[in-house]
Each structure stands twice: as structure tokens, then as C-alpha cells.
Image 1 (cartoon, rainbow, N blue to C red):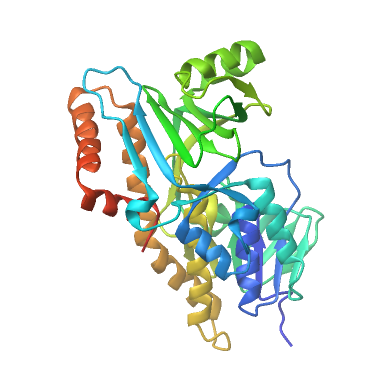
Image 2: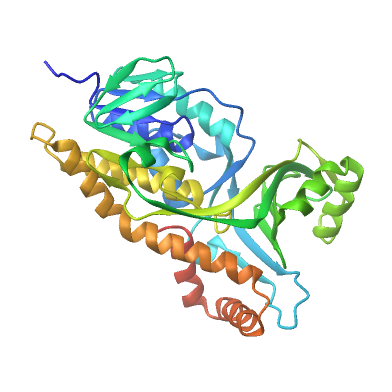
Length: 383
């Protein structure tokens, strides 16, 4: 009889945490998911087709059209007013032979669906409890009890207790920019096009949310966004009309606006000694290039593959899984982190050479189909 309470313990109740708990349980492990209920996540996630395909294969999504909205085009408009400006660029999924680049989902809708799937797994137990300490294979819960498992999965966010207790070093860089998010009803629909207006302090992006509704992600200086949010609906709406260049007619707020500080976070290795990190416990980026949850789901996919590759009857199997997982994730984390960081900083760059490089890059993507196709593959996280 095992001395452990479970084969694996997953810590963290966000989308990456629930997906990880389901994927681990689906490999046959007795799994305990520690997922304290938090406030509703009002954000949305643009999931690229490889991520949507993974969700379908894992049984987490049947028909994406029932839960989300297709992203068929990406339109980039340089609104910086800089000396060297990039051309307006339109990327169409049809050029890559795809019906859509991906799907835009409300995080609350995805989480509800994930919980429904989790409830069908007899070897997955979910508890509305957090963790106050991790020592070796033992976690201490917020009610004072303890649990043990050879494999610990940290999906507990940027301030991950699991990461710190396991000694997995992280580097975090805070930006002066934040993101304001809310839902908007527009006078004219954006259709299936994600529209990005690139301003000096970051993009102002309208993401399709069905009908004439769009999800707004506005990146700007933290103080600017707080002032905009606090200015009242009438003043905020006027600012949004100006930022959208009135291309879509009237704008009405369809939800409250929330402001989130932005930072990047990366780890030297995503697993060791029976502990693995997924989601924002291992990586975090500004919402540029739709990489956040996409990267988290690739974490989950590689964790499932690492578990499938190990003989779990062998000694120290969990340690071997964590080492294999870290190896599998290393290149993807490094490549994606570098890509998003470079892209974000290029959007903010004021130096003439940087402006020229960025504008030249968009001209090249606009004029060279082969280069666009390669950019599609990188942006969608194809491996």
C-alpha cells in the first residue's frame, strides 16, 4: 500500500491548473487538485488552433463554436504617429490553409467547461483549499492538514509558493504599462478580425466576441489607464472612440473595466526533484501575440507526454518525470519568451533604428507570402 495520499497533487485553480489536473488524472494517476475558489476571471483568451486541437483531443472542448468565436483575420494599424511608420497589414487564416487562426473564449466559460470534465473523472479529487507550505513531497493546506504525493504540480501563478519552496529560480521584470480589459458593443461588427491599433505605449486591440461585441485589451501607462477607468463611462467611451479611430461606429461599455499590471516572468527550468511548474508559475508575458494560455496548454501537453514516457512502477519515477518535463519545455519557453519580449519592446521603442526595423519587418510580412506563412507558424505555437 502506498505511503502517499495521492500519486500527484496539483496546486492552483486557474485554467492551466484545472487542465493540468485533468491531463494528469487522464494518465491514470490518483490526483488531488487544490483549487481555492477565487473571483471570476473577466478576461478572455485567444487560443490558437494547436491549443484548440489539444483541448479537443483531451476532451476539454467538443465544438469550439459552442464556446467561443473564430479569429479569421488579424489587422494591424500603426497609430504611433512616428517618423517611420509600419504599413497597415492584414493577415488572413486562409493564406495558411486554415478556417481560423484560433478561437476567442471567455475565461469563465472555459473554466466552467473544464470543471464539468473534471467532475467526470473518478480518480480526480478537487478541494477548495490552498497551500501554505511545501516541504519535499508534503504540502500543508490552509486548513492545517497535510497531504503527500511523489509528484507536485505548481500552477499557482506568478507568486507561486510551489516554485519558491522547490527552489526553482524565477526572473521577473515589471513594466510601467498595464492592460485595461472590458467588453464593448460596437456600432459595426469587427467580424472575425482581431484589430490591433499600435500606439506608442502599447496596442489597443479589439478581439471578436460574436455579433457586434468585442473584447478590448488596451495597453498603456498604468496611471493613464487608471485615470481612464475612473473618469466615468461617458469620458471612457469618448477615449475608446478616439483610440478606435471611429472605424466601428458607436461604442457602448458592455462590462466593467479592469486594469492589470504587466510583467514578464521566466524560470531557469520548469521542473526538478518531483516538482513541475505550469502556466504562470513558469512563465508570464504581456498580452501580446496571444501566448499566455497557449503556452500554458503546451505545458500541460508536455507534462502528459512526460508522464506517458515513464515507467511509474520504477523508483523515483516522479523525479524522472520532472526532469523529462523540464527538458521538453526548455526550448519552447526560451523561444516564446524571447519572441514576446522582443515584440513588446519593439512596440514601445522610440529610437529611429528600432522603428525602421519594425516597419521594415511588417513591410516584409506584407509583401512576402512565404515569410507570412512562417510567421503564422511561430505565432500559433506550431512545433
